[in-house]
Image (cartoon, rainbow, N blue to C red; front, side, top):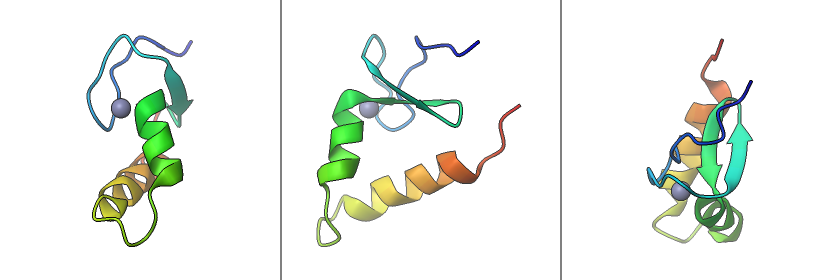
Amino acid sequence: MEDTNKSCFLCGASDCDGIILNGEKICKACEEKIVNTNVEDPDYDYYKDNVRIILFSEHA
Ligand SMILES: [Zn+2]
């Protein structure tokens, strides 16, 4: 059973709505950041790298 009360993997926010991606929580704010951040944005690498970590890390 997924723990939806986990804190956000990216910003650490708790008590927020979000999605569970490969066992890690991403809050709505970060999800929107990921979607809306483009390649020229300085934050792009940060989000891209963290999403990659989530997607390619192994969770039981
Ligand atoms: Zn977040």
